[in-house]
Image (cartoon, rainbow over the protein chains, first blue to last red):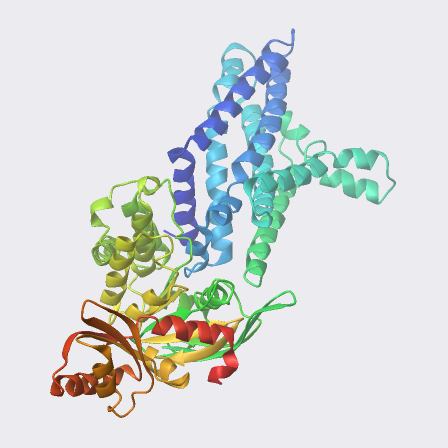
Length: 241
Length: 312
């Protein structure tokens, strides 16, 4: 097993051995259920596809907020509790630490997201919606979640403690989510740039509607890559401080 | 085992350590002694490959830490001032994780964990969650993680910090038992711990090494060669008169004299103790106890940290 996977396994165990993981998962699933009822099932008569689309809109939002809390502990907690020297004094590359931690958060988010499957499954059984639509929606949710988790990993690497990590991440995510508003008040080429950076408005609606565009997939993967790259650089820079 | 030349580390404008030069031979137990903020932890972090130096060369087992840090990390075990323990894991699982990180092959991890637990007397808490351990056990598990991959060099930053007297003695015994299998570099600002555990001392003050050598060497460099304490039965005047006849013994003082027993402090190297004993016995004076001066190392340390020019 590679070192990154070993770190991921330990970290994932940490989510499930403490109450933190269960509390975050419980709150996220409760919010998902309430959101599904409010904006999907209970929002009056709608086509099945629209209900599912609304469900993925809710899931995107809850997962984005949840990912901030899932990722805040990744590196900042190690720094806070003094466990980071175990990793950085071992023959382990900084990228292995960052990727291992990110993977654990991604798997945790995946498990929580998977637990919501019964909601679109209800529509699949009782309404008219394609499996492809549900698959595309979940793919989008996980890709967007991956991007937010990577930003969270970067925030966690930057911050001294978990609270600061959550604040840094929330600011970065908010800027990306609201980038489309900046696009509205700017001219080209800034308008195009802000629009293409928009975490939700530009790249998520196609997934919500059941369409997978390579452009959107690449965008989320690129955000993930850049944020993780930043986190690795921060880890390397800390060895000089 | 360790070669350090011109090691310097700046935090912004502040030089935490400046131009450190020292070397450590294989199998030695070395004490890094200094007041809080003297630069001990920074130096140990660099040797532990946690921090990069601003300038200078450090070689561990002939390998440059800047060029091949992973190779060096395989050879060292590092215990920071706060043991890096995951509270949610059991001791056994944690040590296994540490062994895996340090590249111990999967087939050998259980054996390596067993050995580390044996050396640190932590086998009885193998299945216990770390959050439930006492401070003494936490410190021992910290040492166990540092040696689980059988490193050549062990770096222990204040391993007795916060321990009670019994735990300090246990830790000392444990560190002494590691001699031979490992080269050990440990830091402390507790003088008695350093003098009783280490072969040699490196005294650091304001980021610079102000003295190095054995306790005896340091005492000699500071002049006077230390003191000898001797407790005799009978009047102090006669004992002092005899003690002064021994070549090398300088000023003599009475520390206390009660109930026909006198405790004397003789200025002179502790090596002179056999000569003092012979002289006193030949003159019919009964010796109840003889030892190095109790405050000796304390005074060396205070002198060194007060005025480094004294030893340069």
